[in-house]
Picture 1 (cartoon, helix red, strand yellow):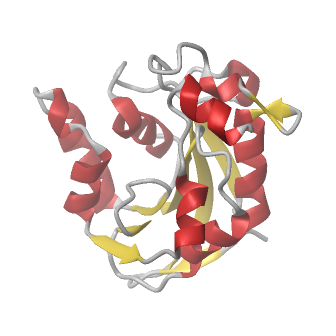
Picture 2: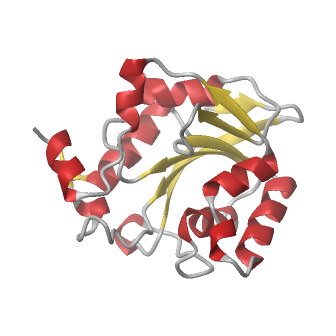
Length: 193
């Protein structure tokens, strides 16, 4: 049986989400397929989510080998990826991680899952990802509004989080190192040395 979290309204199933639909333009190559401990990074992130006890894991982006869900609005960033996943799910708690954060540990993600909150989003202080997002009618309305915005700057994860309400959890200095994302070759090299 998968992990469930308690919300103000009811207990919802928890689904893991790997955001893997980006262009990897700053990296210059597909981040999802970078090798990490003998496996592509996307497989590592799927395994990390599974280790937290989520009911299932979904992948956002055009990833046929991983049953990826294509974004409904091309190049709409992570909000587009989440909207694509939302279209395939009943109401649930989404535990969302980026594909490019290889040092994440299940124990840290468990803190997001178990945090008691009535807010629609639970995240770590000063970090938009990873996050727990309550997928309900309010969240779906927020996603629709952001995707309909003419100005792409309004399609940010921060904007989504502000619309649904944010609860933040503090981190120790050691825990913050788990949130290093590898957007560039330089950061990737540093993580692999």
